[in-house]
Image (tube, rainbow, N blue to C red):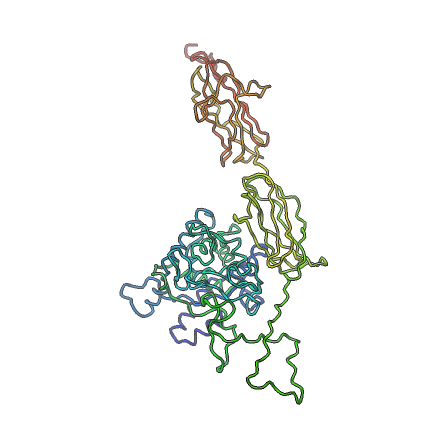
Length: 596
């Protein structure tokens, strides 16, 4: 952040104090072991996500962002403070009403969907601030849709990531390269799987703040991250934009908003000024016409500043000869003659362009019981036509079909970058409750090559042991109702077997499992006699309590058999006898009765 602070230090003494304090605050938040990465930024060993946890371009394609830092004064100035530093703090703490509502609704939704994530709405507000200045100060309609699309610069590799078009221009209007879109600045390929409908209108619109905020929340909560944990919080933010300067800027706004904020009318929010790409962009010479900065807050045509003249010619690549001088005697172009039309530069060839196909990188048979995590993880290798591995390629893994099997964190899609061996390892799969075969398809992001399908099988939950939870004798008079309900506990390998399918049948005899046609019975919802119950299931603790049992007029000893998936079985004895004729319990000793 040296360039940012250097620029700010030149603005005056007041700004000097702000910048110095901000540096101190951010430095204090750094973990031990800070190193310098290949881009000159800072990276920490304890916060950089593992390769299989995030694509290298994050949610935004590592697009530019606003670098303005919050003021040092409290968001809640004293009642008498109407001017000076206090007023600036109160202005910065104001979040447009609809935007603030979207953040809070997203937090509430994630609290229910992924309670272990502990997502604070202030984190969404911090990201929304640096990505789009809270949707350009809250320029949204009543439904939360921005009054004009928010589109970042095209990601053509010229100072940004190189991401060729993945959506045919559907979201960003650019069919050559991708642009980050909307108030939370998602690139189209990420929005394709991360997009959510946050306002219930049946659409997933990256330019709607309700949709974008909910989508950002789910994105930050994947991989089982707990955002109340400092390490997971930093991983999640870095996965959004893989820059430590970005991380520190977001953290500074997060802490600022946690100290207090308030809503302001839509369209009146404070707009940021400084952007991360300001010091990287080539400034026009004094004689050249000034142009506006491209970016998420500009609303200009992707990749071209609004109101600008012809685009500058890209710099010549190393080793490329310059335009040869005209031969002696060759007349120069007459004044006013049309110049030679500029040629469109050929996009640089990327690793993705060299991928010919995907290969299974050693994934064995995938099988897991419902609710369990698959032991095996899917591995795909990107290869050229000659079989050479291709590194730094984004592979998208998608769970296909009508299934509730997902990757860890509850997502059905995960994008992973291939390592130096050309291999991408998908996040762990968690089997859902729906049993049967599941298809997981691997595809290359940004390249039309055939997908590679993997088959995973989800088997039903099972139990190997059933026991009664009580030992009271089950006795009933003819035509009466059993006082106690039968409750059993199912286990598998000694652990509680939850959500295991079970069946209860009043059988004919120990050697004949056919339903009895007399004796005790259950009742269905209409009060009719039922002697076989199917569709039963143990609860999360492996417990199953059967409905009440009734007796007809037949006396004697009868058997109830409970079975589960996996082969566990338990036979329970039931007695129907007139009152006063039942035998004493096995533990009773007649010789010890009174008067003996």
